[in-house]
Length: 110
View 1 (tube, rainbow, N blue to C red):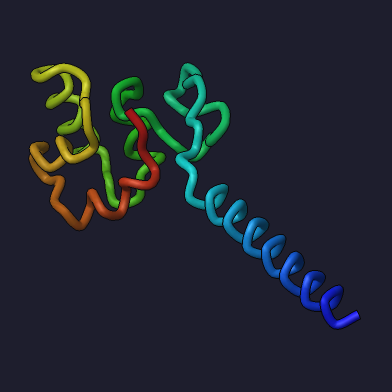
View 2 (spheres, rainbow, N blue to C red):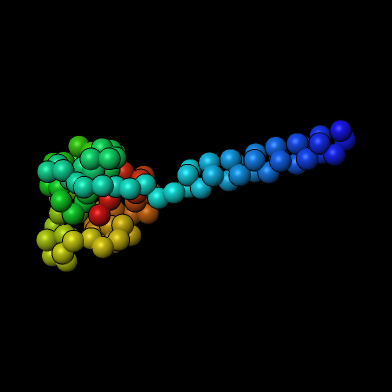
């Protein structure tokens, strides 16, 4: 009887660890952005805006802390250098600093 309860406790413990590790892996998985629609927004994560596909108006409306002047500067940088290949390139845009990048980084995709 004692052996059965130890075995039951041990198997319950192992099952709990398995479930928790599965949840942890799921929680930290990279989100699948999916295809981007004509507005530069992901179909799966509609709150992401593709900074390589939208115009200045869309950028200024979608991104907090980015007004029309900064949005136009982003578009001008893109016109001169081509598409952004990583988010940190926004730091090369006049008027975009580390604090603004930190604010908008979770809202954008490439």
